[in-house]
Length: 323
Image (cartoon, rainbow, N blue to C red; front, side, top):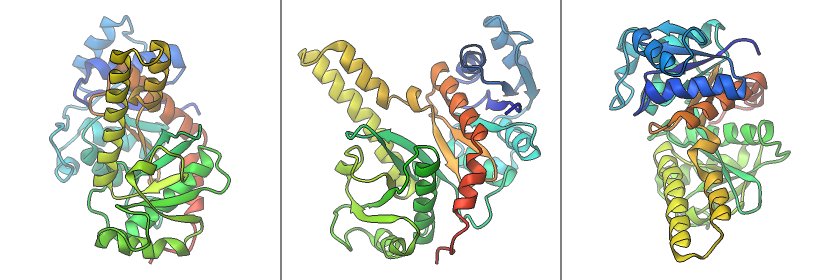
């Protein structure tokens, strides 16, 4: 795909220094065509630091959304890097958009600027987590919608199953619903109502799964609300780091083996979460992302766009509506 990946240079805790460095790395080492969006003067100064002046196109956007913005004010904040980037995707001038900015702001701007796929109630963030079986489990929603309806969670499960089929090559994905017990009917009101909707959808519904199943490979997709999913994702990343650090201190394993395991769960490896359910490709990276994570996010976005995943997921959603 010839259209570039648009990178929000102003997003994240370390933008534009790390976002620009990541874009340069994506272009030079990974062959991803990129365009940087944001305050042109600051971006060009960072490009010059990397000897990349004139190497990457820059589109000026005067305003930037602060990391503290939850999303409601993002769509009315003027010509921001988020708004301009999403608009380029909508116009077809870019293949995908990458941002490490506030998740709520990215989601709001993407819905407004790119639009939801037909029939989608709310987009969701999908992350593929390595499992003990050697494959991966798709966690969805990983943080886009903190307070969904049961119908939204049921649709998240559909989106996740489509992602597992199209991106992870799982022919017949199984789906679990995250709860506090595996027995039917366990959980809060939201979970119980979502559980009642899932058996009628076109995938293998495994039933309820628990927190200890997330990395066990029990199912191919785990659906949940965005609040719980984001807590799970960050707990997984933090717990893996803590466990491996303790093992290293105790001399319980070869350091190289520990680094290999740590790398599998590092945000730098997966780059970010795909925001599914839109009419365009968007990847949301960690707010704390450094250059290598941004570069990986660009690579992931480029691959999703080149594989036509947005259109293929939309086709998979052309089923009986969730009610």
